[in-house]
Amino acid sequence: MPTFSTLDLLHHHHNNTSKIPSQFIWPDHEKPTLDLPDLHVPLIDLMTSISGDPVALSETCLLLDQVCRKHGFFIVVNHGVDEELIAKAHEFMELFFGMKVEEKQRAERKVGEHCGYANSFIGRFSCKLPWKETLSFKYSADCSRNVVEDYFVNALGEDWRNVGKLYQQYCQAMSEVSLTIMELLGMSLGVGRAYFRDFFEGNESIMRLNYYPKCQNPDQTLGTGPHCDPTSLTILHQHDSVHGLQVFVDQQWHSIPPNPQAFVVNIGDTFTALSNGMYKSCLHRAVVNEEAVRKSLAFFLCPNEEKVVSPPGCLVDDKNPRIFPDFRWPTFLHFTQKHYRADDKTLLAFSNWLYQTTL
Image (cartoon, rainbow, N blue to C red):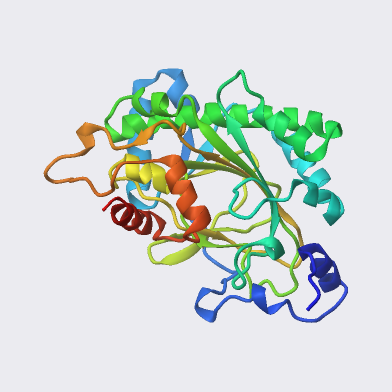
């Protein structure tokens, strides 16, 4: 069988009414429902955390506490990130994904790595493939290192330095937003404003550009299968008006309408472990469509690799005993790269794996 790249297939597929390749067809019980109720999620106003109005602040924290205990998903407004910067980040995405496949493959992801360019035909799985292309790269909050800029120059050449600089700035902005959210989460959980902010101050995070091409059988496949993010916090910007993100709440899937003014945020497994299981990691997926390409910018906040992920003492007592063992983020990342395809039970599987490997 000749090997196609996704793109050959996607392009072939556009000009041809044949069905999509079988590796992309998901089992019936997992196939998407494209027409879903919207999830009404509270808007968390980041200005309240800066404005110093104690009443607004405690209301925000109360709201945040409710959604995080229930499903771990919320929307952030008044975030203060420059609109120009966001627009540019989307624009440069077009530039990258619009290149020929062999150009993109200069940045190809190596097997078992989490950074680089990936499309489903290069992956490690042969079934239930996601209908998408991605470019992922590392970010470090350590200001002396321009890891994003360096990544683009090393992977794609000097011409990409400005693109690298821009994504470096975008990640910096996302890191700042994350730290503000961490202050709010700390207050919501009652461990104080500084606790999680300090924990994530030196974060070593991951940025991912998602590109979901048009698909003529969108009811047969998924852009991203149902999973919880193993990272700590995900800050997503959905471009323009293309729907695609769906969240599982109250035993059913809901759609999240795009709002270019806002960031969509969800708790990931690592923060669930940090909160001793009190705050839920959110189960979500992405669907594709026939009419339009969908693009999103995803920043995954991760702790510095030296940090031990262990809940603060005040969140552990007789009523709330420890649920997860201590770990460092690189160990968990390795588990999801080498041993396990992320779903809604990743953290549990990882805990069991840790207990077994340390016995």
